[in-house]
Length: 364
Image 1 (tube, helix red, strand yellow):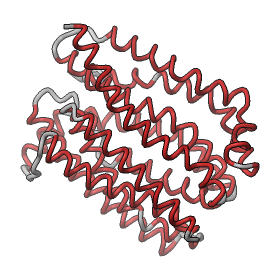
Image 2 (cartoon, helix red, strand yellow):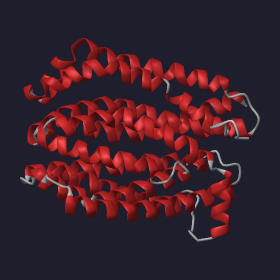
Image 3 (cartoon, helix red, strand yellow):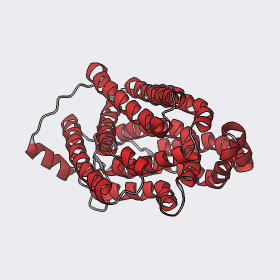
Image 4 (spheres, one colour):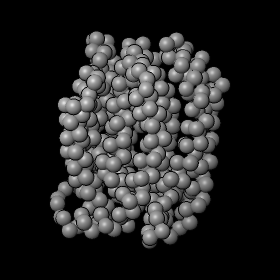
């Protein structure tokens, strides 16, 4: 039985990694092209936009999407999915109000003001796909998830490249990310309906209240933890935006994009498989310590060959790959690489309270 579970774990992991690898390789392969078409200024605006979107994406489902996978019954999982969608609609509406107020009374950057109007649309898209990804993961629809990531990457990078070559520099990066996210999310929905566990949304207020209460530890505890994790990544961007030019933000933004790409490639896939597998074993009353230990060992083994070249020759690598104008980004990467390594190997540990329902002392 253990051998069968072991094989299934690696089969699921390979499915996700293959799709994620293809998606990330497209982005990495085209990054040297994009860095020569778009300036640090455009990358800076994108970094600001994505950092705001990242913050809103943390709260858009109130972290109830994390409860979908370990939910003990299919009924609970479905109502949690519904709850995520309705929470997404509410946060989207509030975002639209906030964006309108910002552009009317506070905005001083004309280009950023245009970009920011797309924020509510992307909040709606991100919240929907976060919920659907958790639903697909619960049902082990890893091919569906893998297909989503490939479609997202292909569409995003095609639009960015096409817009840049056509001369639409100011909006090309944003157009790519918006179009890619929307198209991939629509395809994810239809793939789930055809190949995973189909769902039809309703509105049972009593059921929604009950499931929200039952899994209240997720917004009460995990939400604040997720906000803190987000600030670790985006806090620097907020600081740079306040005190430096968009070009400086762009240099840092490229650093983060390059560093995150390989870690997201493996870390996301391993995390999805880990939480599903560990939650399943825990719900069956099995000891999950062995799978936790193995997950940490695997992540460390994978991360070492990624961070070492950056620590030893980050500036030289960035100047060679992206152009001399981006050498400073390599200096940032040299400094941040050890932190990314430590953050990467601790990732499985962050899933354990969710799996065990022990976010706080009152959890059962």
